[in-house]
Image (cartoon, rainbow, N blue to C red):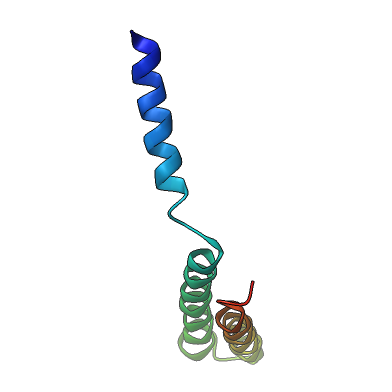
Length: 77
């Protein structure tokens, strides 16, 4: 009896995981990289006023570049 309950739970979790394909993962990664890039640029602009701020801003721009690549890969992978 409880074997069927376990199978139902396993089958529903498998369907839930199958909802994310490669394009969905790339879309989520793009948004995460954009938010982290904005955070890094904000840290460089508002928190660190010395030379370290330039480094934070440069890394934030690098995150934007990687997000752009992830966005360009959607539909091609």
